[in-house]
Amino acid sequence: MTLASSLNREAACGQNWDAIVIGAGPAGAVAARQLAQQKLRTLLIERKTFPRYKVCGCCLNQRAIDALQQIGLGQLLDSTGAVPLNQFRMQYQGRETSVTLPGGLAITREVFDTRLVQSAIEAGADFLQDTTATLLNDAEETGLRSVVLSAQGQTVGTASAKVILAADGLGHPSLQNCPGFDMQVAADSRIGVGAAFAANEDSSYPAGLIHMAIHRSGYVGLVRVEGENLNLAAAIDRDFIKQCAGPADAVLQILRESGSPVLPEMTESSFKGTLPVTRKTLRPVGKRLFVLGDAAGYLEPFTGEGMANAITEGVAVAQLVPEGLRHWDSAVEQKWLSTHYALTDGRLFWCRWLTRLLRSPIAVGWGLRLFHLFPGMARPIVARLNH
Image 1: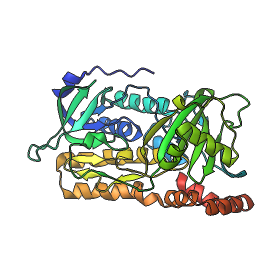
Image 2: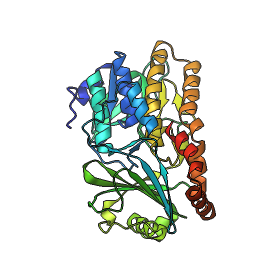
Image 3: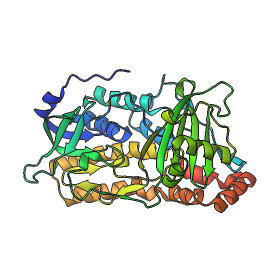
Image 4: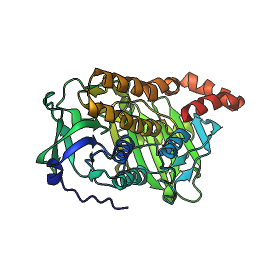
């Protein structure tokens, strides 16, 4: 799908925008669509060219699907070839256990994000891709915030809006010139690693299965996505990657030691990485500024919790923006802090618990034994992550 917008960068600098959304992942694209549906003049900016690869587990859990249905995007994934998910399998040192999933889909971010952006354009949002936006630490007096637009290293101009939404992912580079928005990175934060492969028909990773290979230094998740492809996403200790001389060797070692089948086509050039992933922005709001999605904080998620958080935050922030347009004050900021906590931070108990468990070989061993002997123990955890 080719994304088209009649607006160019120079024209964007001459418009009076209600909202500028920086970052066209699920959080930003959903927010832009919801704002445009309210007839607000909305500009969505993305620094990459779509479709683009993204390191991600590529899983939409039932909570994410329900959120899409609630805003009228239930048909968004029709005809994409998204793969229904029904099972979650964990493997550690040759032991394995499986848990039934209550629903979900596997789909690449190339396809999913492009569909979301197209829905924003169809709702009336303008879209600029291959464009970098950097928020200025500008005046409080004017009732506007400004962003500098640049492309291929060259400044194009400055665009202004009454409200800015920063949804530009880990590290939120759009806020680099604004003090007070540094991210707190966990000391033991792992690196995200991803790759995509063609899946053979006799693959040990069948459609409908999320496979997680667990290791004391990280884990590797594999899932079939549309087009008979296999998506790999991993979270690995930084020291272990250095010890293994690169992410490909680290992934191979984790697969081998867990007892998981190895993919012979893996090469170092196949992999892309991320910044350290476990991090948070201590105060994801500022004067006429909302920070959302991964830009607000990220904890190693499971079975699609990350994209569910992004979608629900995109919907919620769009409901709050009109109030900020009428009158911005500390009450608006406090409402976003409370909403963000309720939708993400407050829901991450099980993610935090599972993250700690996966770092303990003894806990993993006992956990897999218990889940294997008593499958019902895992169901409340999976259900909590999906709703």
